Image 1: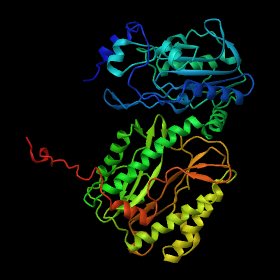
Image 2 (image 1 turned 90 degrees about the horizontal axis):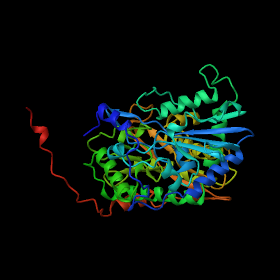
Image 3 (image 1 turned 60 degrees about the vertical axis):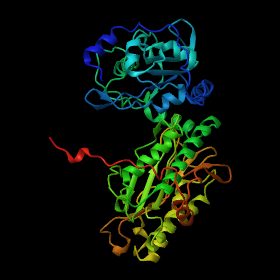
Length: 486
């Protein structure tokens, strides 16, 4: 059952009907980031901000899935990082110097959130409201979004107004405190117009990304607890699928097994759409159809990462669905594995992506030359056609700022070789697509392999596939509906 526009209108006219208390809901996970963590991140950002500046962090908009159905809401990683807030229709202001709050108190932050509405909450879930934000997230100067319009603070007085790119959203007269209206009101208060948004230096999205990237690229101990869990869940999914895989499995079934394991361990979401490509489909870098009906004797590239409490893993394994690498598959796999090992050896504080990429790419080029797949070293990019890795965290391609590796960064190392059908080489290699992707923590003089629980070597993968899986005997009866018409 879905809300009709008339019901929604009625809900919006009744914002005050809500229970008196706003206590936490029982029987929920207790290992979320603490209010002290988020307060610390706001304080760290304030330290980096230039004099007489304000930072605005907005919620993500909701997005339409179909007709009157929205996609499952995913909070803005930045707003979650700085507040712990996971709802739409909110706007945070952080000030370098203290300002006057609406209640006359001094403050260095103001947070405007969506108001509680008991009837709306029956349909779309519990809201914190301003009171809940103050009680549970410990943000003292939190207000309902409708109060932002009457805020007397002149944002034009600041030398710099730093914010992410503003989303283009249609105005909604039914909900005067939704994100579209909050953004519109912010633009007006800051003097932002379409003509001066790019020209005025005071409106600076580049500085916003630099400052937030400088913070987010280094993970704290609290963050590492969640990131390690997301990675361990993803590795367990990879290992369990290796044990369960069969040649008659479809790509979609393999994807489903991964995601079942993720959910079983409590992961709320996937960090990105699963890539499960058998054979030539594995040569499509961001393949998402996952609709081949049988893996057969092909390799299956499985790039699947769980998201746990906002933090996402990114782990890829490539396995033979029939349990054994063929000699040609093994030859290409070993090149990718050795390239990853070469990059690993350089991982430490002070290393650059260029150094790591060169070590991996040179190794792959030498191997492809030896196998006769390429005729000159420069052709390696035809078969290793993406970068070596990226940061992970609140985004699967997490924000960063520094050109060099630093202690506390978490990155992926993911070399690959992809030889699509009709490539200019011996057809024996066609349809082989292999990527090995692991998540590592950069330390002062070396690294920690965080995703080592998922087998990486040819021998370890074949040994794991030979094991019995708890999912192996999970069989469903065939569907009958496809045989019937009108």
